[in-house]
Amino acid sequence: MISFDTFLAVASGGLVLGALYALMAAGLAAVWTTLGIFNFAHGAFIALGAYIGWQLADAGGAGLGLTAGVVVATVALFGFGILFHLVLVRPFERRADIVTVSVITTLAGTAIIESAINLIWGPRSKQLARLGTGEIDLGLIRIPMGDLVLVAVVAATLAGLGWFLGRTRTGRAMRAVSQNREAAELMGIDVPRLYALAFGLSAAMAGLAGIFVGGLRFMTPTMGADPLMKALIVVILGGIARFTSPIYAALLVGLVESFSNYFVGLYWTPAVLFAIMIAVLYVKPSGLFGHHQRTL
Amino acid sequence: MTALLELRQLSGGYSPIQIFQNVDLVVQPGETVGFFGPNGHGKTTLMKTISGVLEPWSGDVIFEGRRINREAPRGSRRFRNFNYDAVTRRRMDPKAVARAGLIHVAQGNLLFPEMTVDEVLSIAPMAAAGREKGNRFGLTSIHSLFPRLAERRGHKIRFLSGGERQMVSIAAGLLAVPRLLILDEPTLGLSPKLRLELCQSIRAIKDMGVPLIVIDQDVAFLSALIDRLHLFDHGRIARVLGKAEIPDHDTLMSMLFGAAIT
Ligand SMILES: Nc1ncnc2c1ncn2[C@@H]1O[C@H](COP(=O)(O)OP(=O)(O)O)[C@@H](O)[C@H]1O
Ligand SMILES: [Mg+2]
Image (cartoon, rainbow over all chains, first blue to last red; front, side, top):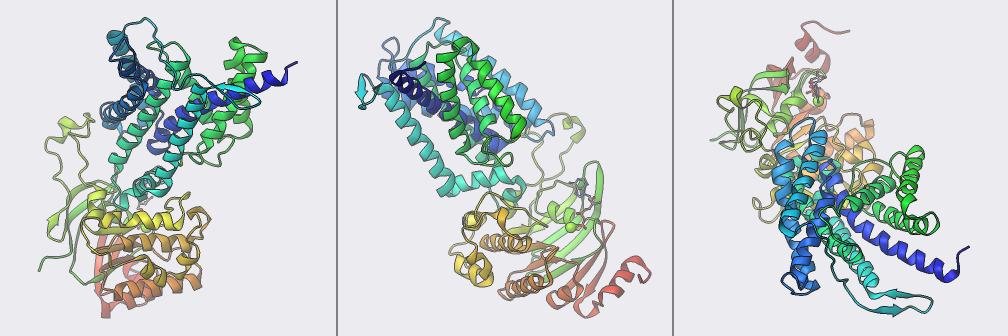
């Protein structure tokens, strides 16, 4: 039914996809756990990151190479995330219906960002080079260097995030805010600043993810829609009990997607993923690895 | 001498329900004052308003001679439907209050369930940053005050008992180097043994020279600890008793309700 070599290829493809989803989902979860809102513009952040990266890296832009693209896109998105929070989320923070209002404002943000990308870079699709060229022989299997770099960069980023949340005072304060806002305020923690920081970090991770997505698929202004949906599935499937929960779920989703693509085809894969997600929600309402909601 | 804390005609509540009205209070430096009153009459709401978690409706909070609330917005009707933070800024900022050294240990604080005791205590001194040089409450003094916390350093808050969580809460308050410490029902729901332990720790905190406002239902504990007792009833300070005037629990209840409860 499936040869061993094919199996390895499909599995490794799934894991690479999973790593990418983990990066997206961790960014999405950082905002959801800290602010308690869902940022529907996360996909648009991914697109913006890809285009800024392209502008820097591609010969059609500044032609400075992909490394410059990665650095500038990540830093720019960090700032953009803070600005986005200031303009579209923070003014409504004290409303009782902030959760619903933020759905609309972040969707509005998505539309605005996509239109702006269209205006600046045009609707014609572009493509980014991959980080790393050639293939590497791992004995049983040859995998593209780009995949290896992707996994390594994602692992390093997530490890860095884990270190920040677990070891630094600011990171711990961020977890404190997500777990009990009022108690955090009473401890003198600057909640609005941490909200802005969470948004900035989340957007920076989206920007980085955008560079990788741009190397795997064609870039269009709406390229973030599919990654957003996948990140959403990952976050709901895995739960957010710990910051590592979406990571496991992301690898799972990547593998399922990869095998589903192979066996039932590209067309049916989203349906398969959603069916699995719904089934998990029946059995474990707070996600596969969750015991309760909204902590970091 | 400027008062440590002064409340002038402070009113507040949970909009639209007013809980307390026109509360006046002066706490002098070095004083320890107590609050006593039936459940649900607004003591906790008053303390949350002092620490800025709730917005004051009117009146002023003055801490060490400085007013820590903003004026009520003028022409507020015009801005009522205008939601932007920059215009309708919060009248009080809990972060600024804590950083000024007015530390509120909230009633039944659940703290941060997924963080360890040590992690919580590591962020607690943030409120003292820039105000106190050389923290006089190090982790060692906390551990000698609450030896249990040394045993449970690596445990997550959600696995602690209510009493242990209360200890973490108070310890975090101390690490913020309070210039005034508010303890809201610190012994609520504790076993008699643990309650005794905690009462001793609170006495030790007072002996370190930390000014306290203590709310409690245990009159004997309060009368041994404090200089003045405020009887709180229906959102007002009904009476103020000096240390010598504090009677036993039953007499106190009859003072509040006008008749002895049997
Ligand atoms: N979050 C809230 N929203 C609305 N009403 C509340 C809230 N918390 C407490 N109350 C009400 O405020 C009143 C005063 O409560 P509280 O300040 O906790 O009293 P105390 O501390 O003296 O027991 C009570 O009647 C209570 O029902
Ligand atoms: Mg109370």
